[in-house]
Image (cartoon, rainbow, N blue to C red; front, side, top):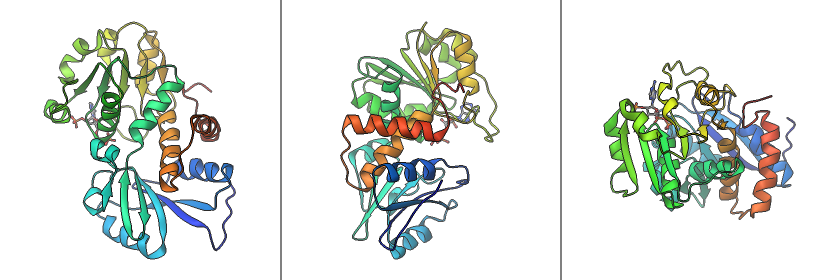
Length: 290
Ligand code: ATR
């Protein structure tokens, strides 16, 4: 895409490793142009351990805000001046705003996932939500589900201790080992995959044989969007479930992140309009179909 900048242009970025295939610059620069704002958003490779150097450089050259992806979402926390309640609850930061040299961390992953879920015609209140995986993405989504009134939030994970740690102190949450996944799925209303199983290039193997126990008609939503139809989606679709990939989560977390960077309160109509625009710009369909 064509981007324009002037001497006055604000600088935003995404950092991570790997970062080369990130869709964030495309999404953010499309949104910036649509909103008529004077910002430019870049992808900057920063390896694990490279945060202190990057943070110093960001202050020096006047970066206004940045997003973080693997492997920095948790590692950045000790360097920040403040966390928003959402970031504190998620224990993870995907957006940092820099003002007067102070760095404030926020997480838009959970709210981004929920907004994408609403696009598909589902929502958390009063639902039994089951999440596969117990990493940062699982935590962000789980806390948003709890805080928006889910009836139960179940964490199903290969390492049971990690699931138990995530559920500690949360009365509506429960931990399940992967070996007992089928028991968790029979009355599950919404199933979410946050593990990297099936992700392009992740080299993770594993299947989803327990999907056959999922409550009839329950949606199965992946956080992965490459490939557009993930193995998780293909398996669930085969069993007749509605499915979606993670492109909606990516798009909406980006919209809320830009709002955070620039202190803009987008109304529902603006979020919906930007969502449509960015989903189209991404070139990926929710359903994975072309
Ligand atoms: P993120 O922060 O993006 O959510 P993460 O912290 O690496 O990623 O978490 C990945 C989750 O996927 C973990 O819960 C991991 O399970 P463990 O806690 O047992 O490590 C889970 N995961 C990764 N590979 C998996 C596999 N092949 N089968 C099942 N679960 C897997």
